[in-house]
Image (tube, one colour):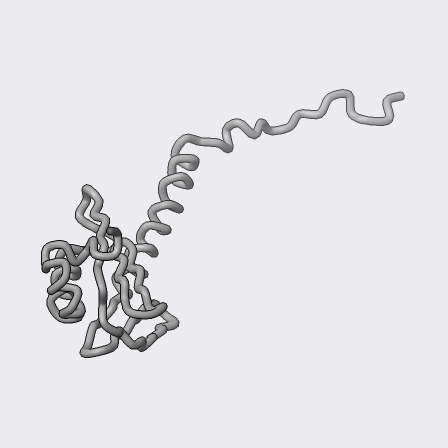
Length: 136
């Protein structure tokens, strides 16, 4: 007399991995992550005023930081092939400002050099080389 079943049949797990479910998982999740990243980037801004700047970021929990912007000695810029870039703003003291992945970095650099760069630096190095003044 047999105490257990002679044979047990189970369903295979292979049909559970249907191509459209796998594709959906690997495409939908990254798509949501990219959409969220785009939304976060749309809610980030830096506004420059005379002597200070305001940095705003956040979608649900909005953060606003107001910081003093002393005289700028130079602006260094790295631009990618796609048109965005990183800026390093060398200011008097320890108030250096690093901005990464900024749209239209050339325009921001021109604005900063025109409005905030120290006049003595321009006289010493010339307006065209202000961005590399500290690298020499």
